[in-house]
Image (cartoon, rainbow over all chains, first blue to last red):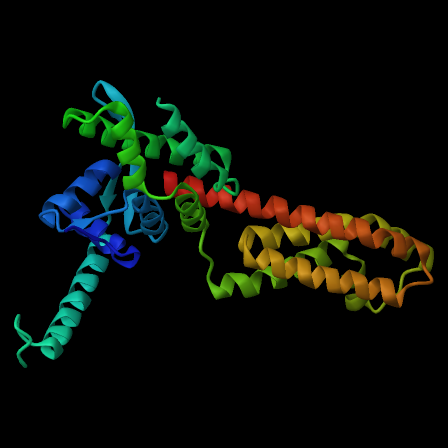
Amino acid sequence: MAREVSRGDIGSLVLAVLSGGKCHGYALAREVERRSADALKLREGSLYPALRVLESDGLIVGEWEEGAGGPSRRVYSITSKGTAELERRASDWRAYVAAVGGILGGANGQEA
Amino acid sequence: MDKRLSKYLQTVESELRGLPEQQREAELREMRGHLEAIVARLMEGGASEAEAVEAAIAQFGAARKLGRELQRASQTRETWQQIVLAPLIGMACGVAVSFVPLYEALSYVVLPEPLRLAWYFAAQWPAALSAGAVAGMISPRWGGRLMLLLLSVHFLNMKLLLLSIAEVNNSVLFLLLSSYSGVFLGSRYASRRAQRRING
């Protein structure tokens, strides 16, 4: 069963997806689902407050683009500051996972 | 667009009243496009329009909560330096505009009473307006509020000390209104400028 992404993690996931290329909000949500093999689901509206915070912090920029035969869409891309922040967050996350993994042990609860 | 989607977006919009109109419309346009894309995808998968709309709204989340989060996230964040400096610089501007206390302090000359009162009467409104506007521009949220608090205390203090002077007494309310107007105008200007910078 898909697990809902917590609000605090949405920004990091957005940065990670945008590091692969620019995207609009709908495509961001689909990409999170795809990369997590449907293990994670987003309350999709919650993307927008996260996008605003990332924009005001200068980590991403958004631009309106005319859609080919469709309505215009706001497309986001990561900035160099955002790339640096993504690396920092990814490093913090790996350290956290390693620390928790050390306490919880292996898959069967064995001590590490 | 489906009525339920319209109603959903209207509910979100009701929580975005603090944003400038152009920004509010841009947010709604973006979310409308996203919701319509979800509906289209679900209908391609075999759902009826009604089912797809209901699922899209559920997937997006509670409208009021989303609106409140978006309103909060869209407000410019301020540093503590901005918050502290805003009322200080605002007060300095107010003193500079009203000129008389500065003149008296620097030159050690006390102006004749009728001229002094007339000047205070005329100059303190633009002084209060500019103090509020400058503070509101530097720190739209908290600095502006601090400025209003300081000005309110200052004017009420004046009212208590100068009870015998009717002209000053009566002008305190108008001075407060001037400073509130200034903070409001300064804050709106700063917020719009910040949003134009973000939107490019």
